[in-house]
Amino acid sequence: MGTTLRAIMLTTAAVLLAASPLVGDVTGNDPSRGLGPARTTPNGDREGAAHAHLSAREAVREGNRLLDEGDAAGALEAYRQAEELRPGTREVPFVQGLAHFTLGEYEQARQAFEKAAAAMDDQLAFDAEYGIGTTYHAEALANLDNPQLAVSHFENAMQRYQNVLSSRRDHEAAREANLKAGTMWRQLKQLLEEQEQQQNQEQDENEEESQDQQSPQQDENEQQANDEQQSPQDQQEQDEQGENEKEGQAQDGQEQEEQQQQEAQQREQQALREQAQRRLREMMQALRQRKKERRETEVQTVPVAPVDKDW
Image (cartoon, rainbow, N blue to C red):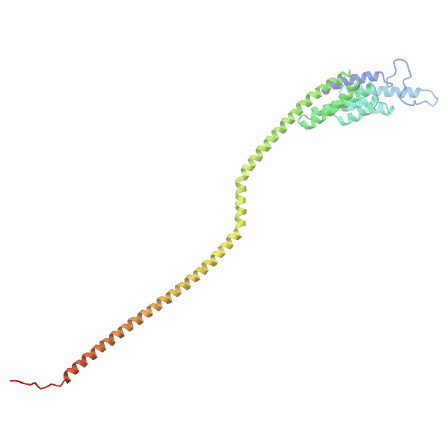
């Protein structure tokens, strides 16, 4: 792209410069026409102006030769000298744009081509506009590894090409470049759409995987949160249960004590009953003994009555 572009643009520059005041008018007209006020010698002649024109012309020719030989930096120096000799010309910025383009200095090349275009409706202006398009085109090709940036550069390039073609439909270089830029632009747009779909799909898969991974952890966290939330309640319940147990134990102890007291009372009562029974038996035995003794005594004291004998 770069070699073809340089060849086309250098050819264009050669044609333009051949008809430029910097190299003279083949019709024999004044070569200073259109280049601003001419300088004069102390004698009032125009030799100084002619010398200045020749110096600018030679500087441009030298720059073109160096650019054609691949010395773009040397060509820029020659063009700078020509610009100093004849400031305000549009042809010099045009060839400066070519040199910057050759060096890959696309922003500087655009600035130079903008000066050459200068909003003038002539062949140089259209070629300069085409040159601006080529800088964007070249930047797009240099950034194919960044499709989004390349798409933006291709769009800028096509806009410039179409600016040329809107007025000069016979500008074959702009037409061909526009078709190539459009083809690359469509391919990159499709690539970006596929990448976006793939990214969305991967994102969805990652989200699903993340959700699957987080579900157990989330459940555990929720369980932990529930446990933590329930911990005070559980503790309170445990405390209440402990207190109830203590109360129950106290109540059990009291009941046990009461039971023991009841058992003691029962034992005491049983002992009293047994003692009473023994006493009663003793009393009954004593009573029987007294009765026995009294009967015996009565028997002994009964008076004996005389027996009447009838014999």
